[in-house]
Length: 214
Image (tube, rainbow, N blue to C red; front, side, top):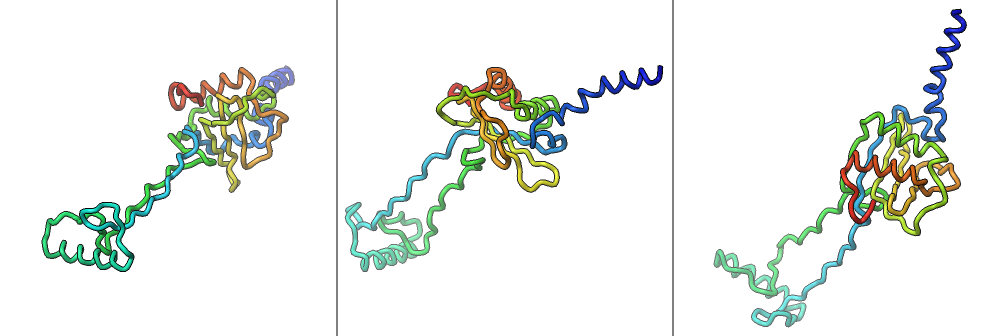
């Protein structure tokens, strides 16, 4: 009788024991990994190079001064400004020692895409769902778009592993790409069920899907 009860107990525990082990590597070893999900906003806009402006003659904007006169004129402007406090700057002349305009700091990036929001993944159900998706070959198929505009990124830092596992997810283009590990499946396009699950994860973490897709 006791043996029968033990067998029944082991049978009930078996699905729980193989849940994580049934995932494909490296997602089978992420029970204690730190997972961060990022909302991405596309690549950064191009930065225009500053256009140098030659010093001009006061009263005639844009008319350049010879180089040897430009430095002298700037010095005169600085001296006049020191003698007459409150005198507005003379157009076309920059006093020496004026600090240059600092460029704006670059936005935070993830794999070449601008980060709009960062969320540590603490909900256990969402965590298990995400790992089950990427740890199962049946989540992927050959159907994917001829584009890749990821709206969601995932960074998974495993215990005692310096290299994180990173994912770029493009729901609108129906595919994902990985970095820091070998993609184990023949396809990286989403099945309809996978696309629906990933859309649900995005909405739980960041709110409604944007009109231009994710």
